[in-house]
Length: 161
Image: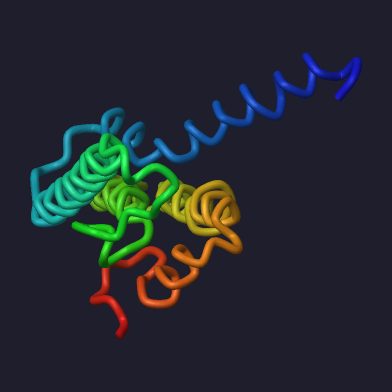
């Protein structure tokens, strides 16, 4: 990057992440700044979906941590627990919890316009910085290629035979 290192870093890393954070968190911002809205079924549904996503992400991350603690797992692919149903269950959980927050934001006036938040995090994880970047790291790995053949990339599904 040469002489533009500092300026490029400022915009490409810090300002970009700040803008993305603002966009992704729009449902939260709208929900907490709106006038009081009655608690309804969408709030319950959104909270339930948020909780499911949170638990899915937390359990997947915990399973990955336990797997990495085992010395024989170095350089291997986790294929147990939630990881047998999705190659990226932690990303599935992350995206799910943001959609749950969006459902909660629907209860307030104009909440539907915050759909850009969960759409952004979904697009980033599915198509930009999440799954594509991580899976590129494993290209040519035979163990991963077999895992990829039988395991859903994102949505938890029963493994293929």
